[in-house]
Image 1 (cartoon, rainbow, N blue to C red):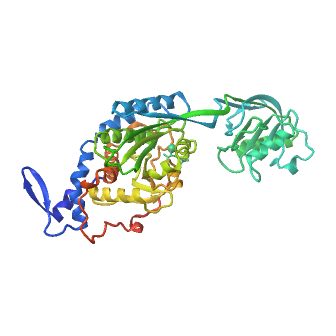
Image 2 (image 1 turned 90 degrees about the horizontal axis):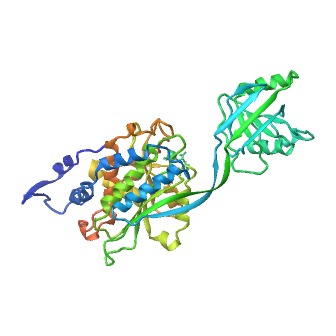
Length: 467
Ligand code: BES
Ligand code: ZN
């Protein structure tokens, strides 16, 4: 939470009133802590312009519907983001990319001798509508299926030993027209076949109890007739988009050639309005783009929102993979905002992939110390769009609150769970950290000779995030 930074100022400095301006006065050479106070007026240049209601209202707009990658809803968000950037005076670039995707079925039905079960479809199952007698084939290893003929049968298979994929392929190669895998423990299976394969037949899962019941029936010599319907599943090339807006250095003379990226993902998981994950980060990227538009900087600041993060960081991987090495070399830092406004999550953490401090965490801990009197905790996490930057050797970090809120990836991730206080805190810390690096160097108060740059003992603030 934002702490009153004035307490720090009063303890360390007296003030001179000069024509209404309050200027800290120090007896001798300012100490490092006193220097932080001198920097505050520069922080205020960004802080005073941040309007948290803009962030909140943008989240409210975006969270009206889930924004699953490659759906019309994601594309509507892309267009909205592009328009917002342009309304601030940017030329926004919409970068399209393709990937091999899978659409889950809209209908999954299973009846055995006319009784409906509630099956789960495996990710990457093909569609199909089949009726056939059921046959139990154990774990469906190659050895177990040796010499078996499953032509025009639906195979009932127990979970365990070999992969779901192997089970489905082994049964299909013996002629099975469908596969039912039952669990070997309590609960449902949320399984995947890993990728598509022309050999697959429709494949669903049921619980252990349902499976055991069917095995008993078959062992008693009963015939079990199965009807299995998987409709609407499809696999193939999909396209999604990143949106990029660049704030160029104010003039060529001052240009230091470096780039700071401020990023978020705009897509969500199916069924989740994604107010916090990640309309919050996207709305903050937009507000920071607005605030920085007319501030003098010697560094390019690139604001990017990525598509298809939830499918495996696809948009950010595309972005990084398509930059020539010389362009990657110019990127000094990546500030990645993902889930930055939840009322019900814990404190802000700045997470690097390896848990080690870097330029982003150092700028962040310096700014949070200046603003709040304590540095943001450093943690370790992958699982978001800072990863491709880090893998390319760029100092990168994820801004997130930890522990996560219970609404993560659920239909309850809605605007009523968003805290303006949390949004404001993150927006201030990130914007002042970025500005600290990107503003004209001559605005930085000179470091006195031999002064140690304020150091934050990394281990002291390090804590592995519990995600
Ligand atoms: N917003 C989350 C970020 C996150 C990071 C959540 C770390 C929890 C821990 C992100 O959108 C997300 O859900 N990431 C996926 C992984 C991604 C590679 C598909 C996840 O953590 O399951
Ligand atoms: Zn997510």
